[in-house]
Image 1: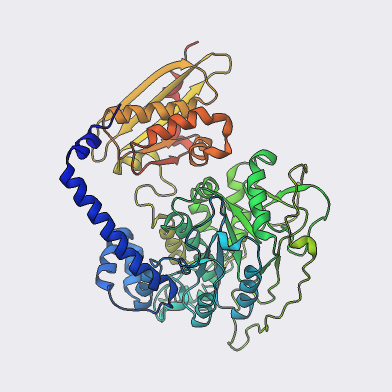
Image 2: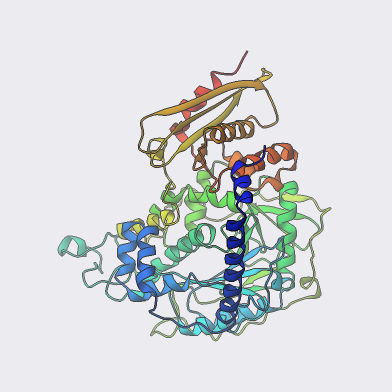
Length: 562
């Protein structure tokens, strides 16, 4: 049926002409402004801080806002993060199947130069967007990024890095506890870790930066908000071979068919000392921390474990993931990789050691990594089978952590990062707290022996005790949950409710509608879903588990016909 609002606009000829004139004018202005912004070096400016502060007041929770307003540099970095990518004039378009690359850096410039040089030789690098995530601001690191001309590159700076806070949290404060037992002897501030040690800002910055970066890249950037594919994550001491980008594209394309249960794709083995088996098969193994990539559905699973991540007493983000987050998924977290590495970890100095201070690790960054001819071309073949590696060594559930993460202030800041772009639903939300917006719980249920399925939905409006319900049964299909979602969306359209968050206990439904290309068998359902989705300008669907889903699961089961 034709849209009545569209008909009305078409009838209003004068308004249409004004709209066209306005659009053309804005386009010309944006064209004139964007070239100098993306081609020139950008320096910090205090202009526009008043407007920025108002924006932060709307978008940040009170805790983050209070921290940011205490530091002028933090506000500057917030402002800097809003700038568009560099080199748009050189590379105006990204490839349709591009894999975004995120480079996580601190202040080891001697390593960073090597990594950037290796990236410049990667085949296909000009087709994608490179995001460099800085832990605070270091001028030498910034200058290296400004020299990049081989692709679009966007910089983001953690505005809550301990390195930019002098005299206030998250940096060192004058009242911080320093030594074991200080909390009992004095009125100092801070909680010890499980070993009795107090926080070290340059140590905790590792975990803070990674978690802030993940939340920002997946949920906070205009450039990646609509990205539906994988994102590849590397660090400032990772050397990429020329075939790295083409190989990760190949792996992410093969993963749905070759290893549907794999959560990620990796460029390197989980054993950082290994260069791979060198044989003709793909490998499914525990997820590594060198050249790892995953999609938005995996990020949703990780984000739901924010409490596990933020309260685990270990300052290392990767050990935290291996020891507590991944085990909480309920099934092995495998990644798919090739039999030959396409990325190498070469750093000798740890991220927390930095450089230039007395007692720090000093390394000139000189590396001698052999690049063979096979490392210059795609060396993964579609016809290869997959070898699954089980019972590998490494950190697992039960490891209690190395400590360094016992201060409740760090834990609160970490949780704040998980909600800074998600004001509607927090990572550990239960169903009772979803009343702050219009929420619809959706479910489809069936019994193995039956040909019918039950479908149900339950909607609650903001600031209202009133609820609406719907239920029906129909012949069982390949995806009762997806049919239930589509039916619920159509009901909301009939009721003219376009601002709705849909919630399901079935995590695969979130994955299915977020990445329909990975489930071609449901193409018909996805066509119907996409048609219904056009009515919802800010479509959102969230997974919720545990006891929260029990009651509406039973509700939909009651409509299954024996």
